[in-house]
Amino acid sequence: MSQNGPDQDPWGKPGQSSGPKQSDNSSDKQNENGWGARDNKNQEQSPPDIEEVFNNLLKKLGGGNKKGGSNNTSPNIPAFNLGKILPIAAVIGGIIWGASGFYTIKEAERGVTLRFGEFHSIVQPGLNWKPTFIDKVIPVNVEQVRELKTQGAMLTKD
Image (cartoon, rainbow, N blue to C red; front, side, top):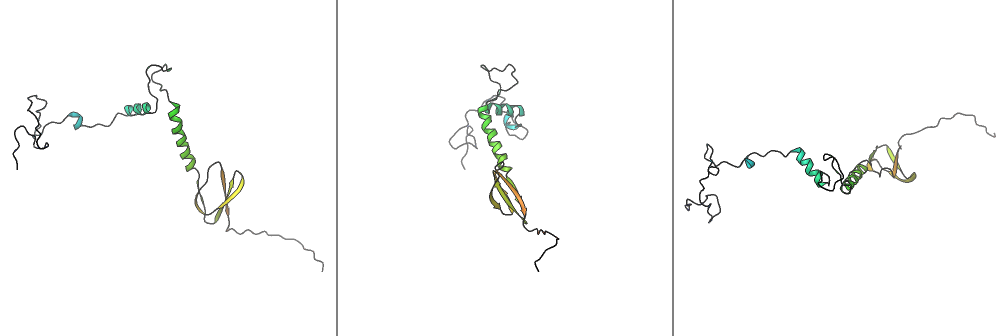
């Protein structure tokens, strides 16, 4: 093992010295175990402020308090940028539209698909998807037996 000189940090990279010791009290602080004190920033990490997070989000979306050429008279009302909000709203609307098209057909049924009111196809049992507002699916029970009971007199030629 090699001996470390008085000016070399034992955990530092080989060949590098930690430099001359400073006599400043802030760098020589030690706790009761002998370890040096850390910065308060590194020692206690607090969660970010919620108001600051929302302000940063508004700035990224193009809103927030704008200095200068704003027509806003109240500094608390953010000016939203429609160019950034409109695509986000379109994506959210597309996801809702896509999720609303799922439906199930029972085992004893078949689905009759009407596209814009005209017959399109027959759907098998299970989980299916249809484009909402375009297709309409009517479930029909194919295992049910319906009887037509009639009574009447029949005339024969005999």
